[in-house]
Length: 80
Image (cartoon, rainbow, N blue to C red):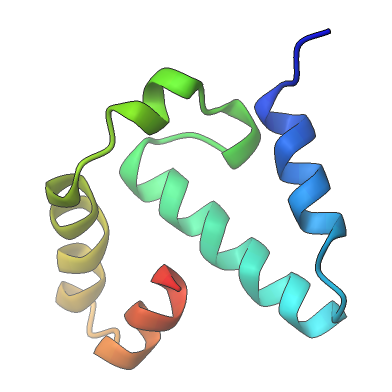
């Protein structure tokens, strides 16, 4: 049986104990993958993850958020 990214995402999500933490982490994960890969977290593939680079994160996530006026501390929270 093959595990899908949706299974991984749901398992990770269910491991979060606080509803507030779950909400914040889900927002951050979804935002990241939408901005960097144009996909929902459960639609990404192993290949997508293997091909992610530091430059992708900086150029497609950090820089656009900074350009929108998002504080560095907020960006850092999303990345954590």
